[in-house]
Image (cartoon, rainbow over all chains, first blue to last red; front, top):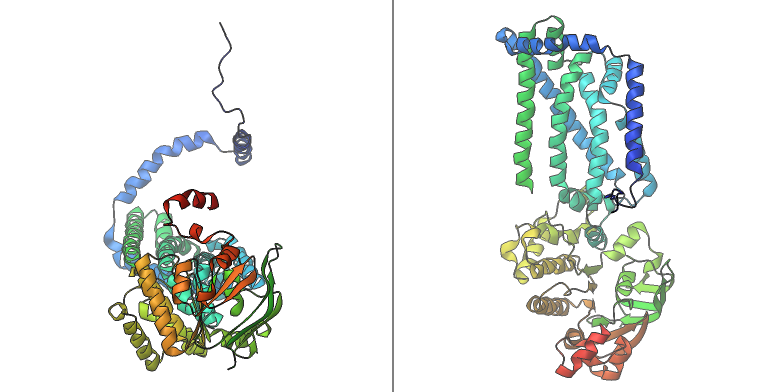
Length: 262
Length: 268
């Protein structure tokens, strides 16, 4: 009788996957050693997580006017930065799309410039704008705009490039100029996608805005970080709950709008 | 009479070495209805696209209304192009816009600056577009989205868009290849009557030999990039057809007689 075990695996195995797993394991060990994490201390503080959430759940509505006004401020920053970025994104998306002006160098230049802007995270842009423009919501709007415009430029350019070449050809043969072709055929054909991108981005901008308050750009983030630092958990709890509610509402509304557009 | 279009020894060689057109010369006069026939890959599409420079040619000259097309660039090329309407196999409409907006696209080549960019069409153009749509039997659909229409209706919108350009020449690239027989007949009848009434010369690429024989005033037969036949449909006899398609006439008819069928299979 044959005692040898029967192999059930493929003869030609993908050598990349074991290599990848070993790489991850090695990196994990190195990171643990480098950060010198004190596991005992962490374990002893775990019960505190429950405590803090318990405190947060004791909602304190006494500072409602402050919370509400800063929430409105946050929403306004998110909406304004979205609006400006939409206009700029359509403009730069048009320049970045390869099929609009058929100028490969122009689109490559615009694409790479905005890839650079996108690589730097939003809070860094806001901090830079705080230095340039001073504390306040202006810096928040400007900082958010940089990253959002960069994001829109890429995604809109992609939507524009998805328009079939034949549709553009059909207008080229009528003797229409490139700018007219863009505004009369390419843009209307990708409007549904633009709305979808905008909805997704408004959600992201709103939650990023909440973080931005903590670096000094105004809004609800400032209230959250301030009350947490002052152990005023009740107020922070109300603010966090409201942030969640607004984000959820934005998502539901855009799901509706998107359905109408398709 | 001065011809509208003249091909002088036109040649086209693609970068991959394929000779799509070799030494093609012919003239088109006002009011002619010309069918270009030939097997797939014989250069029909290249010939049509060389006329409005969608494909640049590599030799010879294309002269449209007294102007050499291959020398034109930018603004001048657009001015030449707007005098040539074009109809496509896949209609190529902007499906998220209304039928009327698609028809009005034919006027964009004549509109300058911001009026063109924002699509501010004149009331005259709008009236003309509406009249054209009712001539096509589409007046009830003028404010529908173009995506709601059937294939035959979409192609009628394509024709209306081309006619809105007030062209001297209409190019049709396989206009009925995606349509059922009854829509095909409607479209061919419309092409015939619209161009006759307006004195527009028409060049149609066709796969269907019977349609070409029925409608054309003249047939051009292409084979391997060369013109092998150029004349009235009556002169297109069986030996000519065999030279164009490289197979006998019976093999070109799908519904051939019983004993033809084996032959057809071998040809496909």
